Length: 58
Image (cartoon, rainbow, N blue to C red; front, side):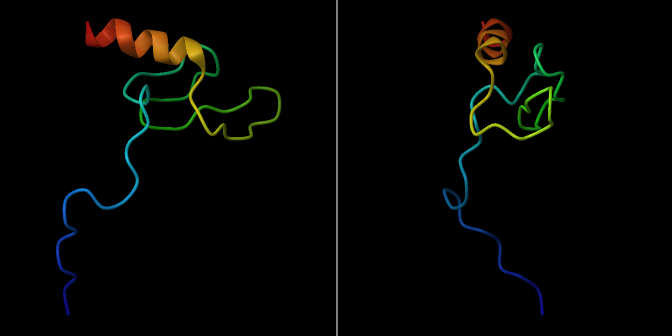
Protein backbone atom coordinates (compact mmCIF):
# COMPACT_ATOMS: atom_id res chain seq x y z
CA UNK A 1 0.00 0.00 0.00
CA UNK A 2 1.37 3.40 -0.89
CA UNK A 3 0.50 6.65 0.75
CA UNK A 4 -1.49 9.21 -1.19
CA UNK A 5 0.30 12.48 -1.92
CA UNK A 6 -0.31 15.16 0.66
CA UNK A 7 -2.56 17.96 -0.60
CA UNK A 8 -0.93 21.37 -0.85
CA UNK A 9 -1.57 23.65 2.09
CA UNK A 10 -1.68 20.94 4.74
CA UNK A 11 0.87 20.66 7.48
CA UNK A 12 2.98 23.23 9.19
CA UNK A 13 3.91 26.41 7.37
CA UNK A 14 7.69 26.87 7.20
CA UNK A 15 9.03 29.41 9.66
CA UNK A 16 10.33 32.63 8.24
CA UNK A 17 14.09 32.88 8.58
CA UNK A 18 14.93 29.17 8.49
CA UNK A 19 16.39 29.50 5.01
CA UNK A 20 19.68 30.90 6.36
CA UNK A 21 22.01 29.78 9.18
CA UNK A 22 21.58 31.61 12.49
CA UNK A 23 24.43 33.99 13.31
CA UNK A 24 23.57 33.88 17.03
CA UNK A 25 23.18 30.19 17.91
CA UNK A 26 24.88 28.76 14.78
CA UNK A 27 21.86 26.60 13.84
CA UNK A 28 22.10 25.28 10.28
CA UNK A 29 19.66 26.38 7.61
CA UNK A 30 16.37 24.52 8.00
CA UNK A 31 16.94 23.77 11.70
CA UNK A 32 15.25 25.68 14.55
CA UNK A 33 17.16 28.15 16.69
CA UNK A 34 18.33 27.01 20.10
CA UNK A 35 19.42 28.62 23.34
CA UNK A 36 23.24 28.35 23.21
CA UNK A 37 23.60 27.82 26.97
CA UNK A 38 21.37 24.75 27.26
CA UNK A 39 20.42 23.66 23.71
CA UNK A 40 16.66 24.10 24.07
CA UNK A 41 14.76 24.78 20.86
CA UNK A 42 13.07 28.14 20.46
CA UNK A 43 9.54 28.57 19.14
CA UNK A 44 10.64 31.48 16.93
CA UNK A 45 13.97 32.25 15.23
CA UNK A 46 16.40 34.76 16.75
CA UNK A 47 15.89 38.34 15.52
CA UNK A 48 19.38 38.36 14.00
CA UNK A 49 18.42 35.33 11.89
CA UNK A 50 15.31 37.09 10.64
CA UNK A 51 17.46 40.11 9.69
CA UNK A 52 19.91 37.82 7.87
CA UNK A 53 17.05 36.18 5.95
CA UNK A 54 15.72 39.59 4.90
CA UNK A 55 19.17 40.57 3.68
CA UNK A 56 19.54 37.33 1.71
CA UNK A 57 16.12 37.77 0.08
CA UNK A 58 16.83 41.33 -1.04
